Image 1: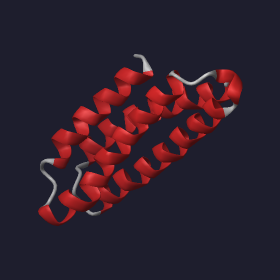
Image 2 (image 1 turned 120 degrees about the vertical axis):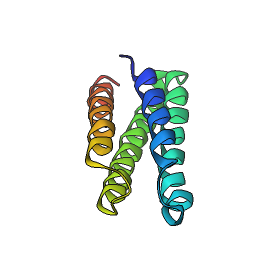
Image 3 (image 1 turned 60 degrees about the horizontal axis):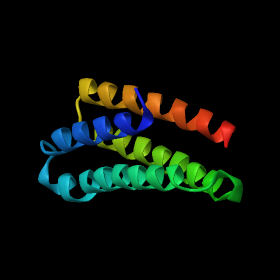
Image 4 (image 1 turned 90 degrees about the vertical axis):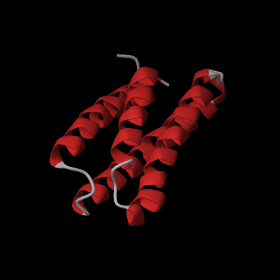
Length: 110
């Protein structure tokens, strides 16, 4: 599955799962998870439309990788707070690992 479609898929799943998070976490940590994913999607689009020769593309892809690590941390924190079930966390992490591999290979090729 292409990276863009994986990012959209994880976003849809996050919206579904965050909907059931307790109110005290939903509007802080939950919103942050969704915003981070939107940010990654925006950066992906920016990287796709940036000229590879400028070196700017490499910076953008590195930023995407950093944001993905931030996303992993927040998802883990939601799990530790018992806001996401083990099944939900596993589902999200499978997608995140796939995205991470794609971004890693993208970094090598830029």
